[in-house]
Amino acid sequence: MANSRRLAWRALNQRICDCERCPRLIEHCREIARTKRRSFQNDDYWGGPIPNFGDPQAELLIVGLAPAAHGGNRTGRMFTGDRSGDWLYRALYRAGFASQPEAASRDDGLALMNCAITSTCHCAPPANKPTPDEIANCREWFDATVAILPVRVFLALGQIGWRAVVDFARDNGWYEGRIPKFGHGVEVELSEGRILLGSFHPSQQNTFTGRLTEPMFNAVFSRASRLLQR
Image (cartoon, rainbow, N blue to C red):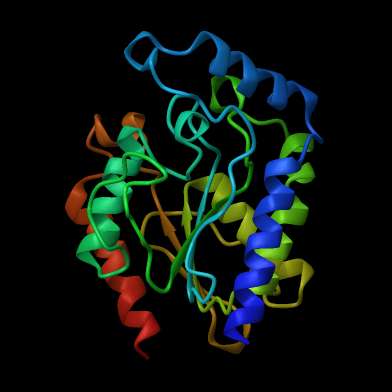
């Protein structure tokens, strides 16, 4: 079972990398890779859809919004090379889900344990705002990701990630009723013991203003760890 999951995980990630369903996003990713940011002029940008990252046996699935233009779109790995990733991997390390607290590049040795990271949109969108159609185009990848992983806890970083999990849960009979309101630290029980947790996204808009603090962020990952120990 473990080996089949690893093979399915690799195959899915390759399909994500090969995707060209959203011409606007593909062109934007490539344009950013051509022009680059001055501080990264010597870097070879990834410039395309970003695959999932993490453990193919993961019971914790983190759901973000989309790669950053000069973060994931540059490095080719989820939440790597930007300030949001700095916050995320520090929190994962403290909670025992990551082998190290820093993420700089795809070959920096970072590994995740019992944790995987995906996003509702796998390409960096202009102004960090994918359209509803672009999010819908990525839905197949989200569905396939959840089908492979033995997820017990979903951690949604932000409102869009939250809605992606809720929509999936409703479509698959894991949740009935009204759409639960997103909030930091909010928990929703899904079927068969699964849990959806909400967290403010570690974007600069939230961290620089103090809307999200490191103790708040760490607490969500500590809670996820405790839920997985039940």
